Length: 214
Image (cartoon, rainbow, N blue to C red; front, side):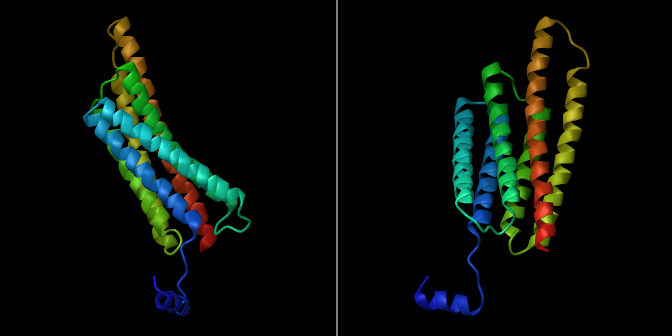
């Protein structure tokens, strides 16, 4: 931006976006990427997709470390420090659970099924709503609240599919090997349900911030 452009921006009252909200939005973007890789893994459970998700998880951890370091060195923040920290943790947990889902599936040899594919797709959509909410939080808090509400609705749909999956899973064990396979799959379902819970937590925190901003 040239000097004249900067001067013009100052005159019309434009403000530079707050770095903490930008960092939270970046975390949310990585969460979307992780969930997209999760969807891809459910279609192609390959080592390549598992490695991609591992890389996304490392990127997410690094973004969170940077945010916490900035938070510790900053006295005045655009929203409460506790809200920034909690939002960052909830968004990062979405990535962590996406990663642990794929990691355990790959290690334990759990094959994707239609329930896992449906949940993964819903998680991706919910993560995208969280991302949109973060991108609009500063300038359009009411729109951010709408995206948070959509994320919560998607979490409810995940829980519905989760219960359907469990009911189908425990409909009738056949032998010891089948019981072992059931337990592995149940753990996978639980990881994905936990990811949805963290998305719901992030949405609730966004609501709290919106109330304080408006």
